Length: 363
Ligand SMILES: Cc1ncc(COP(=O)(O)O)c(C=O)c1O
Image 1 (cartoon, rainbow, N blue to C red):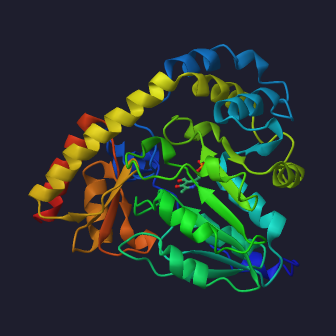
Image 2: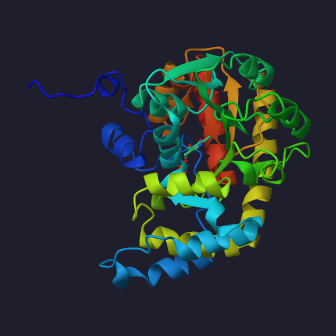
Image 3: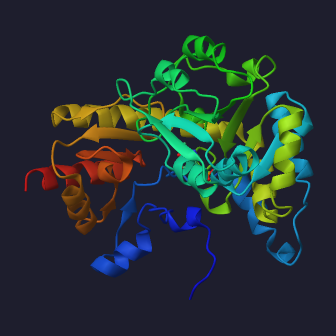
């Protein structure tokens, strides 16, 4: 058929997500499969959240609160900002699209690292925008080069901190240094999806910079440390003015009823987040040691995943690991062929992974 599909859509690819557990079980006839591919929380979510969700099933017939009042109120309170500065949607993924919908006209440029979260590319292209990718420096974002790439067509600069998939961060002083150089009409997106896992003391407190830089937007999510990826809930913090624009673009019922209640309860249970942070840190140390024993180079991570260099064909390793019931993310899908991105699992899952890795490396 000769449909009038926009050329921007014809040029998009479907997002290649981490392989689901059931698909691997079905395809390979396996009973036990662990997924360490999508940076999910292996500890699940807070018990308090589970209790709330169990009691909500009879409310499934009702629309959620379109204003997200309770959710926004609690996010604003926790972060000590005004209610009108908050905007929420179906994951921060959706907010990336909302930001592009709001600012990009055809031909406008958006700047990002060469190896970063790929959804910045798709959402830019969807609006007919031009993707400007800047080579990495020591596996981290090259902030100076990104700022030097700004032209009068630049509308957005994407700062993923910590960066997915490399796990690197840039520091407070590095951020302050570049913010001064970015023209005030260019939107600076601080994607902080992994903030709860950060261990580096030099990590910037972007919220404290927000009053001085009204062109800044902070994105956070309940999908990672809060363990609510299935419910799809992310939020942003920006000036009241920008928040007002985004709330016009976001669909009224994008955050479903279960997600709203679960997220409010999850925010209250900061003991769970501490447990998640500490467990992740310990497990990361174990994996670092094992990778060192295997002589494999890895990038120090401030997240719940580790990128390491296998010096082999990562797609082949991916397939061999699948046969052994372990799903990882091959670097070839992320712009780093030969590398593997491993989501940090539970202690037991990490041991299973290391044993499988030893086996496939010796093939
Ligand atoms: C850096 C980064 N930003 C945003 C997202 C989107 O997360 P969600 O849509 O689940 O909130 C992800 C998910 O992997 C991510 O890694």
